[in-house]
Length: 321
Image (cartoon, rainbow, N blue to C red):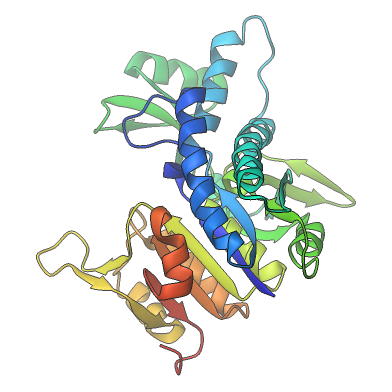
């Protein structure tokens, strides 16, 4: 069997500068579905993980606007809403593409919970901006009323809420994901899971509880890939490959590497948090957990990256690079 876990970035649903309308998102996800189906048609059974930044932000904004009439939902429920929303869009686009090509496949979305540690330091240091932009006066009021942490965004000239982004330490539903993706020859299911990084939950005794946080999508995808014992992990983004010395006159493509080399480069600061940092960290964790290969590529070149060597490839085994 040929299998892979594939994390797709926000451009799978929205292009830069586009309004987050249903029509725009459905049009973009249809294009994404074609690229993913090209790979599935070549015999790959895949798990798809997607982002949810703009979508969950819109859900939070609706909460804020309607709160005088309807009690707002917690961040965990908003994450679940976005999983259902985007999962539906991807299911419809993928299954329609399967029908058009005469393929006996069907996309299945799983509402997925990601376990985090309640003592994670991230809970005391919120860093992830979510939701709408506010004026200084609004931000001050919300900090007082809701005990929110607010941060000024110089680019947009507004204030945004910051929420914790703890590390994933487990996936509640990893067993059904594994059963579906490794279902054997001629299986029908194409799995969508851990949408938006999953719903962050903590375990207390014999129960799980949602928390006000978001989990990085790529780190959650890495955790899921390791949990189901996948060997190939693909992160599709808006660039064709990784660069070294990004943003400087010495910038250059970085096409092949190994776990040992990528660890060294990461420790030297080659991949800052605001650029490739989270993806490289996700790659390192996956390979350290037993994965064999990570690919970082553009969304448009997934098939070429997996089959023809496009994109950046990072191997656990030094002999493969």
